Image 1 (cartoon, rainbow, N blue to C red):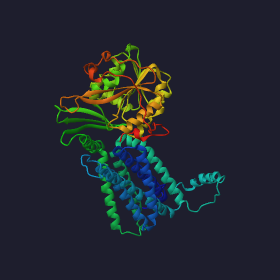
Image 2 (cartoon, rainbow, N blue to C red):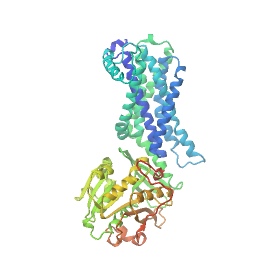
Image 3 (tube, one colour):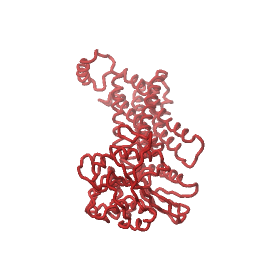
Length: 569
């Protein structure tokens, strides 16, 4: 059997098809690494920028070293087998290096960060070998990838280029074809990763699927080449058989793991999350068991049980990314602080027009329902909204508030929503995740808070939880100056309290700010409908207005001039 048996699948077309596939895998590996690094070290822009830079650098090193490679067919097969192994194993290395948060030693962070970038260099170096090898493989084959049809668009392109450049016919189109298909494969890799692989399958399954695709590309090349053994000058057929066997074992292993992707993802992610949560407590003080883990297009949902030594029994919690959203023991305190305290500033609550930004668990809506307020809610994560409507654990806290007849929920970006609306609100509640990555910069910017001000009525207020100025001083200073630059000059701070460590004494929990650029109504906690505020009124209050401070030498955070101190590492 020869290649001609496959009709239109000419040798050149097969190899250019492989070019597309291997470029697809290589760039997608780097995107997976970038996201893993963001999860472990924060700073989305920083991680992606460094990954791209290291990848391009190592591509250049690979291309520079490629003339040292001998037999083209053998080395291309080796490169693809090595990539099929290195891609997923590199992701495993990043996870492994960061999988033991309780283990500490001097320089651990710096060493872990450096080692976690090694897979970027390895994949980049091997990918740098591909273009020169593929050019050699394609150059000695007749007929372009599109045969005679390829001449027509080339002649048309030559006329267009001739307007600005000096052009002349080329006898060798191998390099241009390989580069063109390689760039096309890279484009496809970035798009498919962003729209399909990551949101639908998560990082673990995605990197395994890429490894499988790389291994299949290696096997396809081996089968195609071995169909005409006269092509082989070296190495011996025995060495080829070894590489093919390795490729078969790798592809078979990856295929089995991908077929059981949900189980694999739960095991790998659950093990890491359990260690991460456990590290937040003193050694031996807590047992953690992950019950559910899933990824939406915007965040990671983790449901887990924790058994704290000083507490009686086990309680269940829900995290969004790394931040706790709900826990059996303190769900009331958080939402009472976010909703009930600021609502107490209004005498006639049934006439309130409220905008809730976030709040996808609908618990804040449940609190607002007690006041008969009109609620517009905007949340970007439609998948989590659906999850909160269906999941029994979350539903026990929201009491099916998504059915509230005075609620209007919009799935979309809060900034775009505000820009497209002229409605003004008496109260805007920000039930948002903390600024834990660059993705949240826009929601903690002067531009966003100016938008909020522009949608307030004359008596309008903005309420939000915030990080402690003692534990996160740099974030607090950047946040306060950002809010001040947006036009808010008064704030009313307060804390809620819970017995967080089970010792019988209540400690200060979440901190909240109510912001104003004009009105400073008195808070009357006796008006609160929730039992929590009434029971803790003496500790929460009195809630009093203060002039918003300003910190010298601290720049506000702007979309176009970001202050990365706003991000909590």
